[in-house]
Length: 308
Image (tube, rainbow, N blue to C red; front, side, top):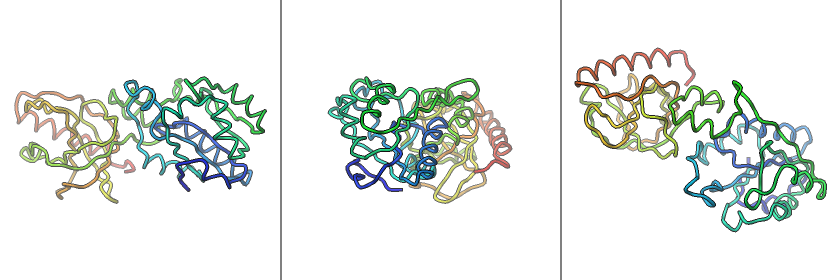
């Protein structure tokens, strides 16, 4: 897959099948569109193209209302490639870009690519203040000679799969349900840094993760897989303030099962499997240790037989 920052770089490509959108999360609904575009382009013998934005438009036009992203650029690229896309465009989104009239957007972005088909979701909007609708895009398609394919909402469990719903589930710690809508586990990334060493003192050494991801699940204890380099290791982790010890700042502490190596400075990705319990202040250190032992064994049982 080739990656571009400007659609003008694709001017030599003929008759591609194109889809446009933010695709935050690349959940099952997004993948339905993207895999459909890849398959359609392959059948027609033409390139498949995804046109997305960097940064997310809301970070530019309404930064205070911009929700935390579910996916970073690295993973977006990886998942797009895995879906079979040939060309990925990360268009630079600016206030000037946001002011383009829908017709201007089509004339300057879609028409120069000589697009054969444009695939969009049922709720797709584009152009200044999102005034461009699917129906208007169809009208422009008839005028400029490209077909518009509209993909209906993807539903699971009676609900429309959406990034906002996934964010809500993750924010409540319902990571198993979120995974069912993403089509993969929700994960966060960061670098292991020095912490308070409380875990080591009580017999459960932890890697203190300085999180880079924008959305962290609700405070609590989770069974998870921790990826360090090429290794994927079973883990139990705590997100919270260590109330038993009077902690004030929220930390992410990862205890890797049956592992004793020093991980300071290592990059780590944690894929959430299940929330075991909410955060709790214990009356004593011994009571906390006893509960951690139970959490660890429960996590071990949950992860046994699960694919990393």
